[in-house]
Length: 442
Image (tube, rainbow, N blue to C red):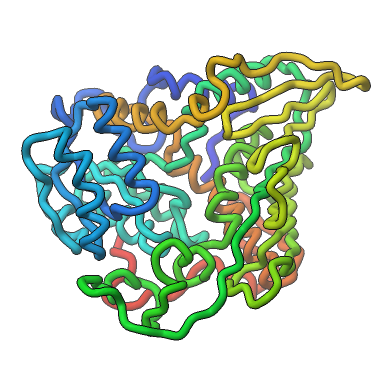
């Protein structure tokens, strides 16, 4: 399922796509004749968290969009997000707690999905089947087996699907990618990714009743039925396997995606190991380790390393989230905080670095990534964060978690996408879905 691209071509097309000049889609198969209307009619599914940033950004940029639907199981989140929209457009969006209402509307062109992770794939697949284009927040999949389904469905139904890995569109990434493609640090052999931020200890609380007005059964969706618990709900749901993928799949997926980009690999790894432990003591509640060290070896011997540390606010190389790309001539420190710097030779002499004018938040790619999505809706070009690109990165999250949980060295076949000689680990590639919220027949 991997696309056969050389490292130089891989890096250059990633940068080119960010400017909207990439040729016809490899994955959607759509033609340039299939045009979106002058104003893209959007459905917003999941109105909390990062969605508030997306909506405000679209309103502030006076983008050529109409917000047609707001969808959330929590009416308070729809109310909060409606305020910037009211100043942006005269007509108020329709409101619903059922995403099916949004997908059934033939006047809705595209949806932006920012729900908890267990809902990503079920909603994305249904949206694609309903003829909608999709921007989905990370990670695209909750388990490995969901990724190939989205790749195949987007291709078959000729839909634009953009993954919320916004650094793919950042001007910082474009500049760094050009240098890497030109060989500024030689052949990149190892890529390192990290998350190093202080995390708060979350202590258990007793089960209770959902807040008034919440459709809690629908919030759970395909996840197992459980009594309502406040720490398994808004925000802290990220700590639990039913709804999320732990630190590696929450913040870590951004840095893992950039590590894979900088390493220039366009396939799955062949071996995976992972270890973790509990550093946040005193009753921290989580299904996942609060620190992890995972290694992914690729068929050509290149290595990707992911680390997360919950105990530090000083970060690594000065950044809470970042990467180092180690080449035969030097290395590059890169951060999605809008930074890169090259160091060359034995003396680690400073080479090219990011210009000051795009450092920091200006280099994080949120605006450019959404612009790329809207551009592709009109041109039917391949979005920068297309499903195949997303799947290859999200797969590292899932394989890392499986290696940790089974305490195994995983042997993996990149072509067949199968874990070899380890049936216990192989079972964790998929999961059960609670009826009636499972995956549609694709």
